[in-house]
Image (cartoon, rainbow, N blue to C red; front, side, top):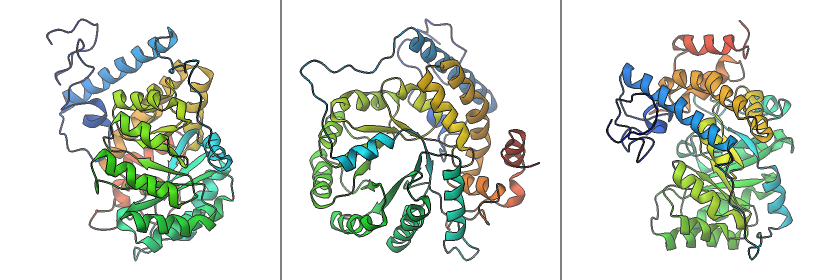
Length: 381
């Protein structure tokens, strides 16, 4: 491992500490943590990834304790962008762990709204702050427009303001997205996660799509970025009703977005996992999509509370104790498949089904997941 000048674990993946924390092919978040990845690693590599990840977390925690990671401070000439009361009320609550809204199905693959209502009640009773509709976890690409609307209405009506509800759109042309947002406004949904996918790639075209949505709708909304430039993110943050972005970027751009949009009163949300948000929170990220919160909201909330207290040791231990162990099991089960399996084992969902062509997990394959949940007291033994 030439050029490595730090006391880090041996890493067979080509890690060169002097230049980067991990190389392009085997970034930690892709090679081991991100669901659905296709990178194949052997047992030795997995061990190295785990050790290297622990080293990474420990160094970030040490840096935070020493004051080396701080949010960008606005200069005297910079003023924070003022949002409307409606947008600001959402921003004020858009903090902490977000639980993906996953879709329960009946045996005929129709949506089981009864189970969905039961899950919403479970989340709200456990004080989960945010229920969030995402393109992947909520299977928006496999639902009709009418089904997406029905889910938004069910979740919002059942939540009754107890949790913040963020709905979502499919990947549609701009006019259809605008009509949809205007139609579901009377549901009481707090904000909408807008997906445009890769329909357009140029910065000006992406900005124009969101500008039109901002001009022709009243519901606060967010983007779900995919390799957006920092300059584009600043332009989007300046739109009056666009209040945030669900960020899928690696740490460098994630941090860059947070710092670049600070003066716009704009929420950069971590696209997933406590370990990602651990680093983002330190520079100003507001909320994170949590893989544990849909089944154990108290863990996601406890992690966030530890960060707010500045208790980095406790935050780190929650990552190691709960997230690492759970992801080692759930990655094999797939996403959003594993969420259905978690909620099935908790007896909140009646089936483990995902819509074809995806293959559903069979109840008999859930032994390790069941043992993990029982070990931590999340379901009865």
